[in-house]
Length: 194
Image: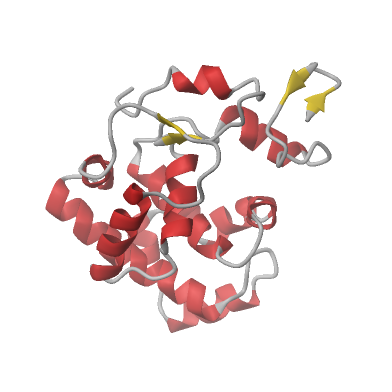
């Protein structure tokens, strides 16, 4: 897809009529992320995407940020049944009780991983190479299979291999921009170690 305003090619899935999607594609998707709060946010959002489009989740991202207290780990850990009921009444987010409960229980596992490895980012380093992997066609990988299995063994839910692969694409483990996208070669210069 070519953007007439900037005369640049983007990945075909970046909806040109959705400024949020263009901004996400151009400024965020596929760039290395090492901050644990951001990693938690993206992991939770990807788990909410299961069975839905990413655009649907992205359009609700600000409402998710507000509802989940900026994805502050300790705030999420304090969520109780009353808070779950409040989230179920929040029209701005995806109101799926199982996904809301899993976001909370996954945050418990996230904290346990942080305590074991020093950070969630350090944990990911045990699965992911330092160099960005160029792959614009896969929806799963050996890395996402292994990481997904380990997260599920630790108790996380809604973290199948496809979900985890999408998460890894979003945080720059994979450069999944299409070869004709203006970011394809730019993002190949960003290693996870950056």
